[in-house]
Length: 119
Image 1 (cartoon, helix red, strand yellow):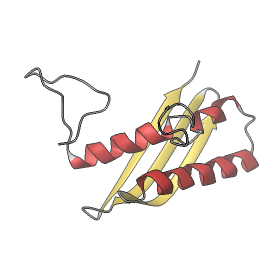
Image 2 (image 1 turned 90 degrees about the vertical axis):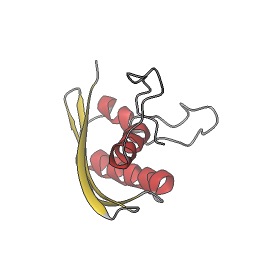
Image 3 (image 1 turned 120 degrees about the vertical axis):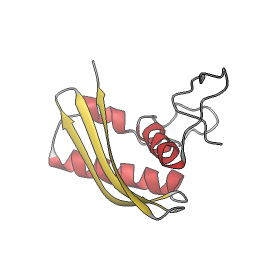
């Protein structure tokens, strides 16, 4: 059973579930938008991506952020996915992440994009 993210109750009054592809996507989303130190029992969990929104927008920072995010994905989700490509964009107060990856269990290629508005 894969618990749906965000947590919700289904029509039967039980914990909502999600399929394998959706569960992997949800795990990626949680990792990307959790800041290190935010979880008490896992202080290194997260990518630090949300800090990019408030940082100056330049190529060096974008490259460093991309490497940090790729490292976090490998460290925390490397057993579940293999990242093929990752693009991080910071435009005004909008953060966009486009990721192409293979789900190790099914060997299926997935491409998804996450967007967060800050402010």
